[in-house]
Length: 127
Ligand SMILES: C=C(O[C@@H]1C=C(C(=O)O)C=C[C@H]1O)C(=O)O
Image (cartoon, rainbow, N blue to C red; front, side, top):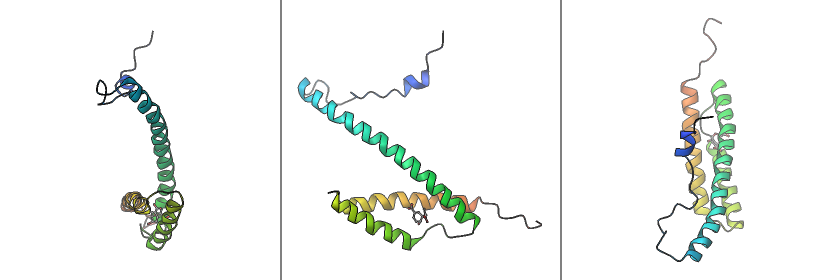
C-alpha cells in the first residue's frame, strides 16, 4: 500500500475556502462558489499562459546574451504597450490596468535577461 502523499495533501486546494462561511445564506454561498469555479479556471489558465510566455522570453534572453544585445528593447515595448492598450479598450478592459500589468511582466523579463547576461560565458579567450 502506498504512503499518503503529504505534499499533495498539504497543497490541496479548497475551492470552498471562504471567510464568509456561516455569515451568509447557503444559496448566496452556492452562487458565489459557482462563479469562483470559473475564476479558478481563469487563474489556472493565467498561470499556464504566463509560464509559456516566460519560456519564450527566456529563449530571447539567451539569444541576446549570446549576441551581446541589451536586455531591454524600449521601441519594442512601446509598440507592445500601444497595441495592448488598443486591445484592452476593445475588450472593455481598463487600458491603464493593461499597461501597468504589461510593464510589471516586462520588467521581470528584463531582470531575467540581465541575470542570464551576467551569467553568460562568452567564447573562451583561447579558443
Ligand atoms: C522579450 C524581449 O525582451 C524584453 C522584454 C519584452 C517582453 O517581455 O515582451 C519586450 C522587450 C524587451 O524589453 C524582447 O526583446 O523581445
